[in-house]
Structure formats: C-alpha cells, structure tokens
Amino acid sequence: MNFFKSIGWRMTIWHSIMFMVGLFLFCVFLTFTFSDMLTKKVDSMLARELSLITYCLEKRDSFAEIEQHINGLPSFAGVNSEEIYWHIENGRGEIIARSHNLHGKRIKRSNVLDRKDENFSVWDTEFNRTPIRAMSMNSKEKEKYQVTVATYSRMLNVSILNLKHILFFLTLYFVGFSVIMGWLISKKTLQPINQIISTANQISAKRLNERLPIEGPEDELYSLCLTLNRMIDRLEVSFTQVQQFTSDVSHELRTSLTIIRGELDVALNRTRTEEEYKRVIHTVLEEVIYLSDMAEKFLYLSRETSTSNQIKRKTVDGVFLLQYVRNHLQSMVIKKQIKLNIHENEPFTLYGDEDLLRRLFINLMENAIKYTPEGGTVEIKAWNKNEFIYIEVIDHGIGIPKEHLPFIFQRFYRVDDSRSRSQGGTGLGLSLCKWIVEAHNGTIEVRSKPDEGTRVIVKLHAG
Image (cartoon, rainbow, N blue to C red; front, side, top):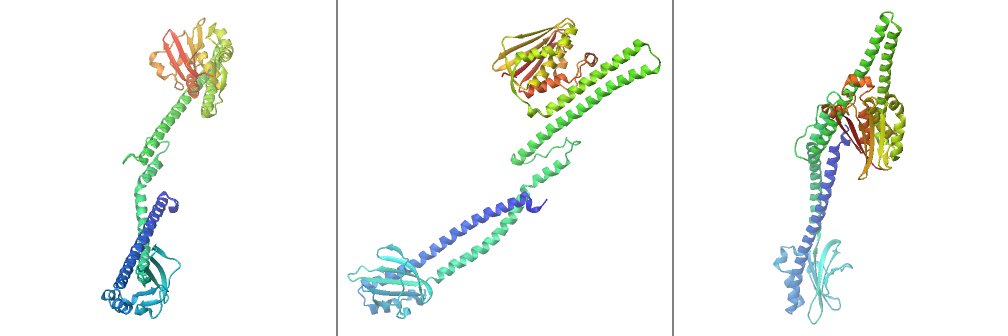
C-alpha cells in the first residue's frame, strides 16, 4: 500500500495541521501580549520622566535648574541617560529647555498619535534615523507648557524580534514533534485495523467459520468488527444453504436418472411383452415429467429471487386473479372430480406483482388438489381486515404431521418422499410460495392435521 495514501499518513497530516493552527494562534497571542507588555513598560518609564519634569515646573524651578537637575538624576544613569530625550516648549512652540543629547534638535511629532486624553499623547517617531517612542503632556500652569519625553524603542523592537525568532524555532521543533507523535498515535490507533485486514484475508468460502477479533472498548472499531461478523454469519448461512441446495438438486437428479437407467436396462436385458414395454415407458415418462417440473420451478425460483428488487407492483383484482387460477387448474379439478369452491364476501384488490401472485395461488391450489382424494372438496376463502387481505386455501386431504410443519418451506423438503414423487411433487412449490409472500411483505401460515386436511392462510396488503 502506498504510504502517502494510507489513513495513518492522512491522520498524521491532519493532526499536524490542527496542531500548527493552534500553535500559530498561540504564537500570535503571545507576540501581541508580550509586545503590549513591553510597550506599557516603556510608556511607564516615560510617564515617570514626565512626572519629574512636571513636578519641577510646578515648583517654579528655572529652566536652567530643571536641565541641570533632570540631566543629572542618578536614576536615569541606570537607564542610560543617552537614550532619554526631553524638551519643554512654551505656548509659542519655542524650546525653552531640553536634554543635552538632543544637540539643539527637537523630538518630531507624528501624524499618528495615540491620544490618551486632550493633554496627553503617545506616538512613535525617529531621531537620527533611529526609532524612538515619545510621550507629551500639557502643563496645567497659567503659562502653557508642553513637555515631551522620548526614548529608544530599539530594545522593544529587538525583544519582540527575539521572541519571534524563539517562537519560530520552537514552532519548527513542535511541528516535527507533532508529526512524529501523530504518526505513532495513528499507527497505534490503526493497529486493530491491521489485525482486521489480516483476519479478513484468511476468510474464504472454505473458512467461513473464521471471525474478526472483537477486543477493546466498545468504540467504532468494535462496532465495525461486530457488523462484519454478522455479515459473515449471514454469508455462512447463505453458503450453507447453497451447498445444501446443490446437494439436494444432485440427489434429485441422481434418483430420477437412476430410475430411468434401471428401467431401460431391465427393458433391454431381454425381449419384453408390449405391456411390459408400456410400463417401462410410463415409468420413464413420469420421471421425465418430474424432472421437467423440477427444472421449471428451480429456474423460476432462482431467476425471480435474484431480481427481487425488480418486482413490478400494481393494484390487482383479487376476484379475477382467483378465477384465473381456477380456470388454469380446471383440467386437474375435472380429472380428480374435485369440488373447487371460492368464497369471497365482497370484491377485493391486492397490491403486488400480478405474475408472482398468480404463481403463488396456482402452487397452493395445485398442492391442495394433489393431496385431496378423488371426489373431495377444496375451498378458497378471502376476506378483508385492517387494510390486509386474508386468503385461505383449505383441503380435506391427507394432512401433514405436526413434526413436519416447521420444515415444509425448505427447498426439496417432502413429508413423504415416495408419496410426493407419485403425486409429481418436487419440494420446491412451498419454498417458492414463501418467497413470493415475503417479497410482498406478507405472511404465510400452514395449519394441518393428519387425515383431516390442511389450511394455508396468506396475508397480503390490500390494493
């Protein structure tokens, strides 16, 4: 499997992207917070300088005394007096006192001011092409003065730049670390999937007893294994049914072909009378009819069940349907002198595939006629109840023993093999009936007692 197409790789990439986005937002927040903190620290220092100068003005010190006092303060020696600039302007904009390091120049004012109030402003500017941060305040004396102080913002910018460099290298480190950890975590997380793949590769048509391992907490992988195991259970059941069906078909074919071959071998051993030849031909013909009927039902069953999702449903006239079935089986009724009575309280309609519904009731009525003695009676009753149509096929024939009832819908199952073969039964009819009813979301129920008869009740949706 291509490494870059694996789920583990994609999980690692997404993990790293999400981590980098979070780390980027954290770095941006940290940079702005640190920058704001340093800026406030510089502004605090400038505010102290302003307070000192303003205090001297309030004391009515001369400007020469202010220059001598401020420039010689030891507190600013620690700050590096060369990095602190100040000057005092009168109301006419003339500088009347200044720090000695201005060398006759003034601190430039910027068009972009951070005005705290009408008497107090802060801005960034340059002095001798070096970035500085300045702060000014108007005095409250009768004679208006404006005091401006400034200091290099180089340390502020350098500190922020250093922080960015540190964050950059930390980001590279943590991104690499997140990729490695993401890969290890995804590999550990997906390890059960590799076990599932390994076990699934061992499952084949001959090893359907194998199941995927169900371990760990009841998470998504647990549910996936449980679902796949249930699917394999259904496949095992289906394969078993197919194998059983194939075995049953082979058995039926072998039995009929053995009978045909035996009869023909006996007929060819020596010269027979005309009656004996007729008996052999009659036996062979019965087996051929049986095989033809079985092949027809088998092909119909396999074709229709494989295309169950293509059932063409429509409203079907129930009375007309039962009359059609009656006419179709009229020759059997006449041959056995059966009384076929159809009782419907009122006209009704069914919702389903007309061809399948015909096949359903032909099979049920054909079975009823086959196992009813000559001169007997077969009844068909239909009634409507709660948006459903109930159709009951009743015969008064030989019945079915109780122990056989749970198995009569299985393919090729016959209560009495010899008796069913003599009647032309293949063991496929009821299996086909059950499939047709279930394909129409209905139910079919069989009630029977030996020597009393059988009742088959079909429940279908009304049209």
